[in-house]
Structure formats: C-alpha cells, structure tokens
Image (cartoon, rainbow, N blue to C red):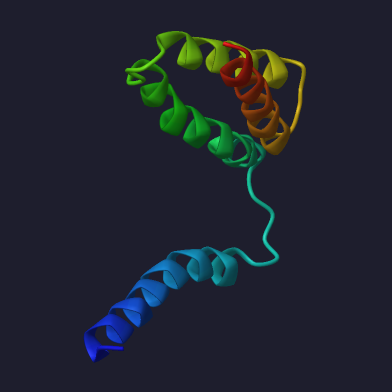
Length: 101
C-alpha cells in the first residue's frame, strides 16, 4: 500500500478521535445543566432529520417511496420508539412496498 494512503488513514483517525476525546476528558464526571442535557439528547433526532428529509424530496424513480417512508418513520417515532427501531421499521415497510408494487 502506498505511504500516502496510510498517512491519510492515520490523519483521518486523528481528526475523528480528537473531537470525541476532548469533551470526554474536559467534561468527564461533571454534571451538565439540564437545558444543555435536553439539547444534547435531541441531537440524534435533528441529525437524522437533516440526513433523511432531503432524500425524501430527491427520489426520482418513485416519489411515493419517499413519502411513504417519511410517514412511516414519523409514525413509529411518534409512538416513542428508539431511533434504530424507526430506521429498521421504515426499511422493513419500504422493502415490502417495493416487493408488492
């Protein structure tokens, strides 16, 4: 393998590791303000929405695929399911939709 590829992999590992390690070391054992805890608990849902919503509108083959997926994901999440359950449930429904349509 070329040395530049190995150096690139090491550099990417360092760049990924540093932002994860700094909060762990600097905030380890400290209690965060309840407002900040609430904001941080909602970050996965905001990130998931930012990744999925553009995909709903950019599907070119079958627009119903995106609409059905968004509705199912919203309904599963509305009933309080975990993010993984929402994703897997939506994948399952859309798999069934693609088989039967």
